[in-house]
Length: 564
Image 1 (tube, rainbow, N blue to C red):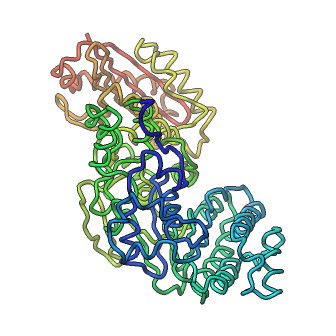
Image 2: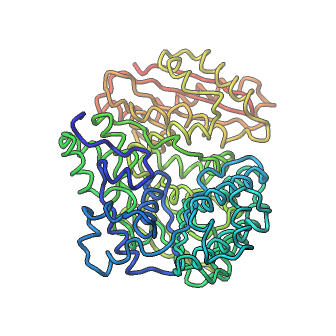
Image 3: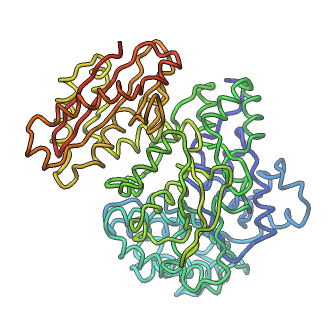
């Protein structure tokens, strides 16, 4: 592909990206001009093109000495008519990004915010000697440039800069703040949420509510922070999320855009595979592909892989899944089996509310791009506080792999990889399997955390990461009953596995010291008696292993018997 245009992977500067293979999203500008609410907040998952799109908006509107229309004359926006082209280069722009405000303390976070503010003041060099500014204004300007502004001045920095730019250009500025919620998200995960939310509430109030010199405001982020906690009293504040139909096609790639890209790079025969791996998102009414993943898929000449995983911090997701309740575990397990789950979606949460009920976990997973609406299935819940309830599912193969590689690891422990004992299961090496699980429980779990939930997590850890090789089913009918878990190999030369799990109470353990081994044998006998292997046999699986497991507190007994 050396003779083709370069792919703009990771490029957030529109001027450069527009000369590469650029998927033309400039009609966002048309739609924004048509709507142009006083303040617009756009939330989308990470790596879906928010920063590049905002940089495009900045390049289009910003009034500079450079003729920036050259970056748009060959784009779709330029054919939309004078109503739109006359807006090009028409107003000053304040551009801030908080994507790097990711520190373990508020002092360091505030220093980074101050640095970003200082950098933006420096960018507006026209103010340094502007005849429209007073001597006091120029002193204030230099104070920000030298990063000497105290916290109370930083809070009002956007308001101050807006007034200076308005005075100089005789036009109120457009304020663009990218990744507006990153300081709040990190503060919550690192334990200084109260300090951060107090500062950011005052900062955004000054910039967007009390700012008489504000033209328009445009913010992007991953999550919508509650208006009551951050934007209280702000009128004409319009949120736009993945459920909104406005701007639905501008963040991520549409089916036609992906088809054109694959054709350009000679990968047109890979469209079905690309759909399976990276399609599946539904933003508003638009079917959307993950743009970061598609660009990397093309870069590696159609080699599917997990490109979106580990591209940014998932600390809040990890925290919410550290000690999931029973309902959360059951729903995660159901998702991995290919089913949908129902959850109330509330887009207006505060971070402290995230832990209040299990639906908030799926709220976060959905808004962060780990789940999608299943065929737009939504309905209203009943009760004292009705809310939209959606059927949610895993969007595509890539995200399923992320669940297997990342989220399932949260259910167990990153330092105790249970998948290492899979060869021992296949070899029917009961002693090794038992010893490894014993060691895992002993090293990672307290007595308070032991119990049925832990044991279910262990079985998930043993099996879920194998879903690329096995079709995994839980609690399905086979023979004369319902097995606990069945693993059907996609390659029928590999063994199938049927799991049955038993639990012993402390009272049972006190009465019979050998109860665990008896229950493990009983579990295998149940597989035989209920003919749980019938479905695997019917599907052509020749070799089958019957695995019985019995747990109590920090003890386990394992019985593995090949089906004759």
